[in-house]
Image (cartoon, rainbow, N blue to C red; front, side, top):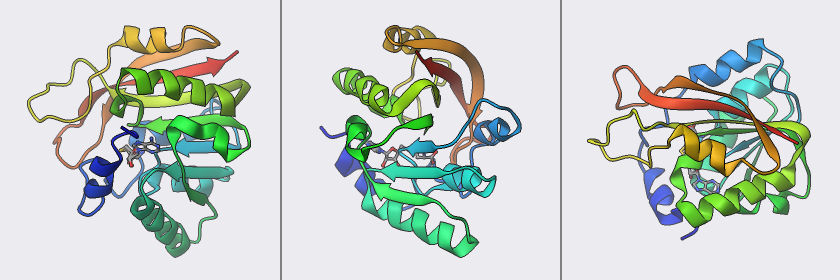
Length: 197
Ligand code: SAH
């Protein structure tokens, strides 16, 4: 399965629960600090709100997503807002195909879509494009989020630590809130910052 491609193609025929028409507040908070440096890749960027927010703040940003419809929507938003961002169809499991490296990789709600073998490929793929000393910043649903509404996998803190045990340092894993179209008070998440050795 290629990251659940059919599933995500279908989701963008309608309004996906994660597509909130504004950037995730926890990612916006990063703009105030010095964790994020350009160039940035936003992996699984969806319709581009996070990528656009970072570009509007002066960063050089490339957003990639597997779903062409998401990339079309992202390009249209960036053009309408006059923000310079590059959006490309691309596969998180083959980031080497981008042919370049980044100081920062952002992941809002992508790590938790992969099954175990895909997760291993994803971490390898990240290792090819995040520069030494660069960071991978991610937010995923945590094991504190109930499963009664379905949704993606819930991730334990230790799973993040184990996935990045080789070649990375865990700088922080903190509780966070995922804004969605279906949670009145947000979904329970981990916000993690990993540094590439
Ligand atoms: N980051 C966006 C979207 C999160 S939903 C946001 O915060 O709104 C997960 C996204 O990952 C979807 O847009 C889906 O199309 C994308 N995706 C799933 N598998 C992928 C893969 N293998 N490569 C790139 N994008 C993928």
